[in-house]
Length: 148
Image (cartoon, rainbow, N blue to C red; front, side, top):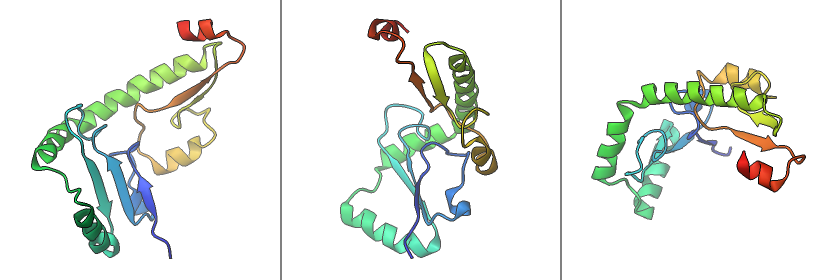
């Protein structure tokens, strides 16, 4: 069968792809993991059956992480849980506020009960992060939207 690869950039510490059947989990480590804008790193976690293929590809592509970027990512890991909790709380407050705004048609944040896949999110995730989107109403002029 086909390998299942999950991009877990949204859910570090909040979702465990390998426990949900993925063979490989990737994560953009420059975002939440590193916590700063000074590292360029990606992370790969995989099951035993995928390990050798992943290791060969990383070596063939010449893209292993540098020691400096690994150090910087480890620095960010120390505060990851605290930062994710703060991101989660702040994003939910903003998302709830946006739901009340007349300029906003809908807010797409899986931790909100109004999200169409909220039950799935609650089943599989232990929390959320700061990433979400919203749709603005067409009823407002471009100037009004820009001012928003």
